[in-house]
Image (cartoon, rainbow, N blue to C red; front, side, top):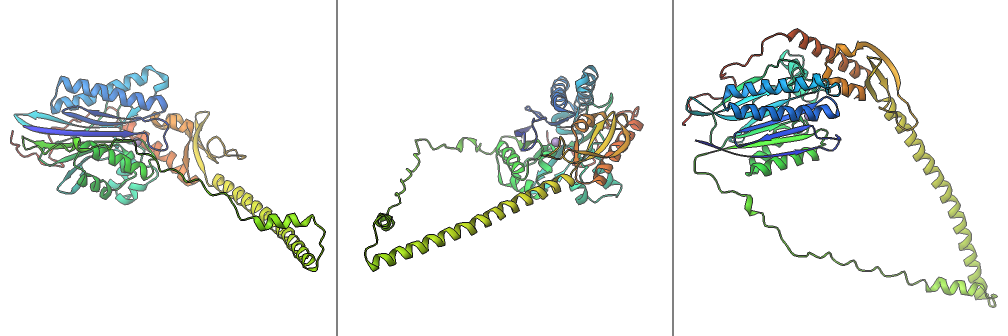
Length: 435
Ligand code: MN
């Protein structure tokens, strides 16, 4: 008998205005969904997918049932997107792992659509189990990009497959024989964009509690930029009764009013006695040579002070002018080195400037692409309408042409039957498991 222990964490990140990631965490089913397609769309798609996946899997908690559940989730998102114009083009990634019993043996079934990922961590080694359905990953397969280039490619987030964007979906399926000590990680791209494998492995190897490991991974991704929603599920395989002690209750919170150290009042400025007496003297008529000398010195001092103030004022004004000029050029540089793609009269247009303008700069259309909204996947329309930033015209052009490529691929793939392959030994062991 196989026992699992899990923990999860999800965070909006530092840049996004909503969290469109979602977690499924039950006793035997675990999933991550990363929704996309506008503000409402992404959240709705992820929620619909998670809900129908769970419901359908609970009806048939088998490997075939899991694949069927993904198809139902796809159906649910797709149908809702047709009903509500505000949700048109919404979709989601879906990576799910489930403990199932096939012919009397416990197996883990893993399914994937999109670019959320599943990893297996065992004996200190981290292995990615899923293959991203992204343009960048495809370019790696065809040799156009190396894996390292793909990891930082500006268009790595363009998906070639997503859940809910068409009537049918093709999901990948793997079978895994669970081994004691296995640790599985499901995550949205918000984690893997910020952390490399070594950083992920470091946390997974050093933190035993799955909930705490999930928390720490999310926290690390935030610290490294947090440019997207971050969602993590950690699933540990704990076979039989030799389950290690729960480390959870150990956290003892130190109670008691830890009073802040009192701030010592700063001593008032004393010791101006000399100046004070000096100024008292000024009102008197200098009666002796000594006093006249003293008055002269004071006068010189005041004159020097006035001169110094003048020089300081000039320097200060110059500094202010320099800062203003630097700011002006920084703003101009910031603006002229920014581009974005957006929709204008159903055509994709490349603008120079910041989305919505920046200070006194207004964006200027630099290129009408001739590509219409019908030529690109509907999933990307809402982000295109709000503007997709690029750092160069070339980058903006390539973003548009990548979208066109993906749309053409999806159109030519329409009608192809959804392959839900039988147990494939592609990635991991399928040898007989001790029930
Ligand atoms: Mn994401």
